Image 1 (cartoon, helix red, strand yellow):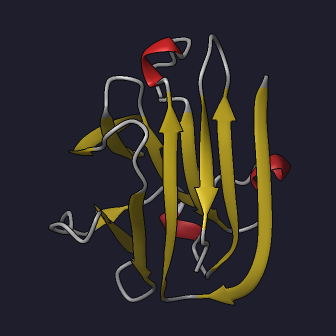
Image 2 (cartoon, one colour; image 1 turned 60 degrees about the vertical axis):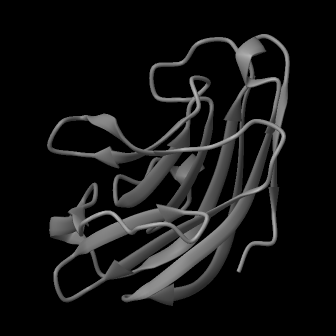
Length: 144
């Protein structure tokens, strides 16, 4: 079952969202091309079908990927370890309508255009999702 949790917050035109993610038994997850565990900052609720978002996916192969609307796909930028807490950070700016990403205080990606950037005013929601298929799971913690 695809599970989505959304937290509404203060609208921010420029900001940063950080969260810890820990996976279990990712080798037992059902395969999903986009990855099974995702974090998304968005304008409006994920469940509401918003198309303005910056998203990161934790894949069963150990890669972490951001969503690139130009490619219509997730692009790998880092790796993570199963059964260990991973710090994910997403930072965005209204001046260029771009976002950048990093894990575990590593190197930031270059600034990348996010989905729906042409209509962007601010982000006001954080969405957390896990698409279960097989065994294992994911934890999200310390949203700040």
